[in-house]
Length: 113
Image 1 (spheres, rainbow, N blue to C red):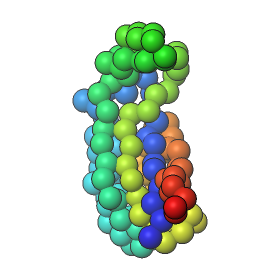
Image 2 (cartoon, rainbow, N blue to C red):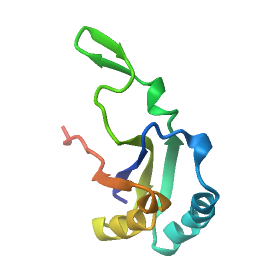
Image 3 (cartoon, rainbow, N blue to C red):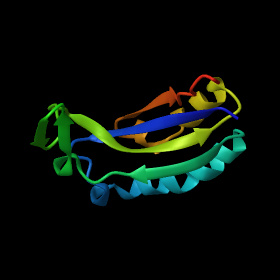
């Protein structure tokens, strides 16, 4: 089954400890909604706040995120779904869409040798 990355955007600095209770309630329902649509969450992670980021560009290492932004990537998960339309329906139900947004991207599959 095809896999998709769902990147979760939240207002900066996206501290997971400040998630509002109504978001947690929506998040508790999300796995059942994913299953109802025929998908499954393969793995997922919340990230520490963007203030803990270290950026590396060539030989330059800097503290903090590389760019100033009102929203940052707060976490991600890998989703399996039968097709893009199903993955999109699942991503649209993600509670992060009520706070900021999510980005859906098909995972890269290297060409067969």
